[in-house]
Amino acid sequence: MKAGTERVVPIGEAANRQNLLLLTQLRWIAATGQVLTILFVQYVLKIELPLWPMGLVVLLLLGLNVATLWRHRHGHPVSNPELFVQLLLDVALLTVQLYFSGGASNPFVMLFLLQIILSAVLLEAWSAWALVGVTIACFLALMGDTIRLKLPPGSEHFMAPLQLQGSLICFLLTAGLLVFFIEKINSNLRQRDARLADLRRQAAEEEHIVRMGLLASGAAHELGTPLATLSVILNDWRKMPEITRNPEIAQEMEDMQTQLDRCKAIVSGILMSSGEARGEMVVETTVGTFLDELVEEWRAVRSPQRMDYWNGFHPDQPILSDPALKQVVASLFDNALEASPGWIGVTATRKANVLIITIDDKGPGFDAEMLSEFGKPYRSSKNRPGGGLGLYLVVNVVRKLGGTVSAQNRATGGASVVLTLPLSRLSAETPDGG
Image (cartoon, rainbow, N blue to C red):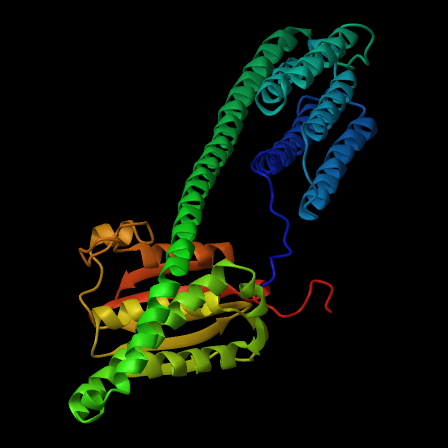
């Protein structure tokens, strides 16, 4: 089966992409606030503002947001320098807007603090300090020559209280935005940490699987010789007159030979799946054919009392199949049969580009602890050494293929295990369509 063609996004880059979206949200709020403030000052307070230049700044802010969202949608990597440039543009546009509306005397000059705090959280140390320097330079520039507001006659008596009220509004706005966005950023960090912990757990599980694979391969090599010796001895015994004259013993010898051949086939399968021969066993087939043949072979070997099978996968699709994939699905069949010898049900369906295989049984089902630890090694209700390893291997193989294995108890009794596999990871077609 070919590897997936989708690019795996690094954890740090994923956090940067989320933070970039947070900056776009901040700009929507900033643009809305600027428009409302300009209209209030111009038409309610009757303070004349340069509407066209200030409106152009709002349009530039919106244009920057649209360009950022377009760039985010195309999935390009987001780096620290890009976030630095984004915050620099925000500082520049805020500086221009303040230049047209009173400069450093404008109470909304406090919004510079919002940019500085965001840079301290989002950026690396060098870029955060660089943004601090740029912001200080912009503040000093606003203390110099700026466009003075044209106040209406007789407004001197209410300008001081109005400026105080503006400072209060700016303080409340800055505090609210900081709490909101810092919480969002912390949420992104928590998701990153959870993803890191999950990757560490997967790495530990995969290391465990490698060790198990080496042990299984070594055991298969060691078992090859004694199994071959037993096969020769059994073949000689079957030709002895004492055996041929006794039909019951002859039949038992035949059964022993059948089971011995099965053991040899299992050992050969382990060796092929762990070595180069595995790649030679990959065959082109279709989903429908693969499932039909797998169920037929499994029925022939396991002889269940009753197995209801329905293949509802339509339309059919070509895939690549190897023994490992067959073993994964057959292991789930085995678990269901062991829990429910009288009946199991298998249903195959298609949802978009995903293969869904559901295995139902009428056994005792899973207890709450088993469901919470489903797929973990040595978690089994069978109470025997090594129990749960088969399901553990199944879950990890399916995860490598980009799929999932989940379990739940049925309302009518028994359990239901659902296996999902993305068809893109099983497809016989190459990424370029060849």
